[in-house]
Each structure stands twice: as C-alpha cells, then as structure tokens.
Image (cartoon, rainbow, N blue to C red; front, side, top):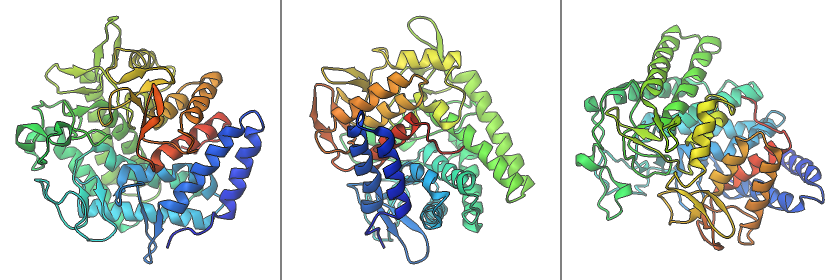
Length: 429
C-alpha cells in the first residue's frame, strides 16, 4: 500500500512552513512542499505485515542508510500523528528484518526476487540488492529506532528482531576491529575500481586501531583505507544510543556493557589514529586511515562525512579541531571541493568532476550557526534545481541543468530538513 493522498498532519505542517517562508522565500516553500510530499507519494510502500519498504528513488531497492534519512524530517510530525509514526516504526522493523538476513549488506529487495547485483563475488542471496559493507548502514537503523522513541515515545520498534539485529551489529563491529579475522570479501567484475575491493576482495591492509573497519563509504564507493573516520564517529554516537536503550527501555545489562566497551575502544582509536595535519600544519580529522600512518585529507558528500559530525551528535560545531577540519574541507585542499560559475561545494568520487551534491550543501547549512549562510545555501539549492523544484544527486557547478538522478529522495529530504532548521524546527535528539 502506498500513500494516495498526503496525510492531513503533513499538509498542515507544509502550510506552517509555507507561512514561515512568506513572500520573501516563496521559492523555498515551493520546493519544500514538492519534496516533502514526493517522498511519501513515490517511495513509501507499506506492507500487509505492518512493515514499511522505502524505495531510494529511481532504483527499485531499499538502502538501510537512505531510508532512514528519507523519513527523518517526518519525525517532527509523527509525534502528533500515530499513523505516520506507525509507518516509521514499520520501516525500523523492515530494516532490522534485513539486518538479520545479512548485516554486511547495504541494500535489499522488496521480496526475495533475486534483483540487484547477484553476480558479485560475495555471499549474495535472493533478498540482497547489494552487499557492500558500510558501517553507516548499521548505524542509521539504530539512529532511526532511537529518534522515533525520543520524538514520539514509541517503543514497539524495540522488538525481538531489533534485539537480535543489535547483537549482530555489535558482533560485526567487533569482528571488523580486526579485519584479518573477518570472512567478508567483496569483488565485482567491473572497470570502475570504486565498485570493488582490492587485495582479493579484502581491501587495503590495515592494522588494529580500536576503530572498526568499513569496506565502502556512504557513497557506496570503496574505501581507500579501511578505517573510515566519520563512520566510526557515527558508530560512537549510536553505541551511546544502545547504552541508553538497553539501560532505560529494555534493561539488558550485558548489552549495555558490550556497547559501552565497543564505544570506548572506537573513540580511543579515533583519538589515537583519526587525526592528521593539513597544509597549514593544523590538526584536523582525517577522512580515512589505515593505522599504519596513511591518511586521506578529503570529505565526501554522502553522510556520514566529516562535516556532518556535529549534526550526527559527535562533538560540537565550535570544537577547534572540527572548525579546522571544516575550513580545510571547504577549500581546494579537499580534492572533491568544486567551485564554478553557479555553485561551490563538496562532490564525490561517485559522480563526475565538478558536480556538487545538494546533500553536502544542505549538511554545510545544518552545521553552521550563521543564519545568513543557511539562507545563502537555501537560495543556491533552489536556484540550481534545473526547474524541477526537486533536488538531484549532483549537478555541474558551471551548468546546473546537467545533473545526475532525476529522482533522489534522500537529497529532497535533506533540503527539507535545512528549511526546517532555518526556522528552528528540529528533530529531537
């Protein structure tokens, strides 16, 4: 079952945002309303068993990461709409159903229909669309389960499948602290090297740091080095959520201890290995490290990235290391920072050179206290939508009419969340 009409609560919220935008920012309201409605009308597929399947957009599969970000802004409405809360709780239940099938997979099919990348050299099954292991794919469902609880008081998402899924997540994070003991490998027959792992599918060599290893970035592109720092930051945050859930809601002291131990070890790893020095010899966070002294100075547009750290709940926007990192990443020192005639911002190895991402621009806006900067970015996002009133994956900084992905729900909802943020409407954490 899909939404045929926009729920009244959502319509009311869209009207409130439209009123706040007023005449001065009527174009923001037009895009907000188009994007906020689009996700419900085009991607949500409610199942007969009470779960929710969410299309990412123009790909017929559900990503654990994307699906969380796609519904996150609705949490501010769900506190007053039980049916909308039911839809989001159903998504959490579907996410943990998938995690229990395979915690190493990042994207799944609606049914066991053998769709997707079935020829990849890894342990595929009929439910899996893609099996690129990414830390954030396991962090996002925990985040959504927790935020649903914090914003609505709902607890039914913390069911048996959730507990079993959490145990699998903790096990994978623990195994991947020492990737040498892992059985996970991934290879794809492709000329695009970002889509496969080197070293017989095991990725670049790493040494123990306390952090947990990731094969791929949130872009679904391969990590250059195995310890992806922003994803480890996100893991620290959600492990803290698990401590709270299993202490205050589900009362399982063993899982509290296990989550705390893992959180502490990963944080120590970030402290000891997750920093590097920029060209100005300032200490900044590295994007990826291998524990052997190698580090990348860059940021990707996909979240979690380094710029998103305070948005995700790691550190603060006024932390000196974060500010030095941010300044570096919004400069040419970041190989994926592009500047052109119409825009400047962060792109990705996943899209062509000189393409910046609305997701990255929105995140830049949500991690600055400067209201004028938020306004500048919102005006930029509206001006570069190629007349569609929706966001895309990436667009050319010199010609916004050249873009990737006609239909990309995650980007739409990040734009909506920035509009909400501008008017001080935020998801409770």
